[in-house]
Image 1 (spheres, helix red, strand yellow):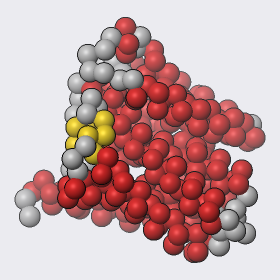
Image 2 (cartoon, helix red, strand yellow):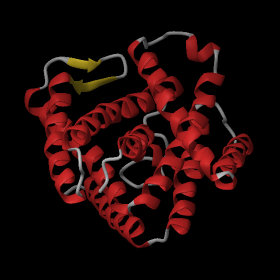
Image 3 (cartoon, rainbow, N blue to C red):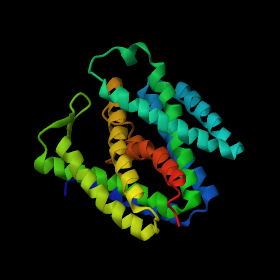
Image 4 (cartoon, helix red, strand yellow):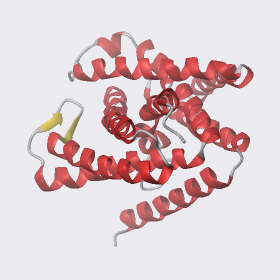
Length: 271
């Protein structure tokens, strides 16, 4: 095993253990603080780096404003649903932006505020949804994490084996339609197991929601690719040896959290 792969495996193992212990053992208050640090503080710092905040001072200001806005759902608990709904809408808009993206287009270079504002519409709703989901049932958080991971892994291996037709060549030449189909097959299998284990009352709705989430996780990956491409960066950061930055690891999760959380509560499928 070469050194780079060894480092990646070790970091991955530590992350898995930390996530499992954090989700299952931490009380919701402490979990929300850790999640705030990871998603809004560290994720916000990396986002600032990618959208033109070139020095520590400007990145610090960017993160501070993110944290100040994050106080709103803390002080006014019910406002979290507003943020979560905004997150769902924001990712609907992101799908349009991804579908119309072309390399060399001047939209983002001439309007840098677009990707800067996007941080507020993505990171804070994802954090709000994560805390809400954990408060309801930590097992739901683990289900979603593994759903995104399985969809991603299924897409990777299916794409390697059968991939021919590019999914989004302007953003990620390695992704294929065949790979995405393989990821969705994995998501269906996982959703059936999840519906059984979680005691879901409406299996059809839960599987459909999980499929929508799996598709949206790809959008999260592609949107981060868009931001990195515009910034001319390969990774969002280097805080995770062998894996890049925080955003590189949670891009699919931050995209899916608002939709999954809203779908679970709106659908009333928990028994």
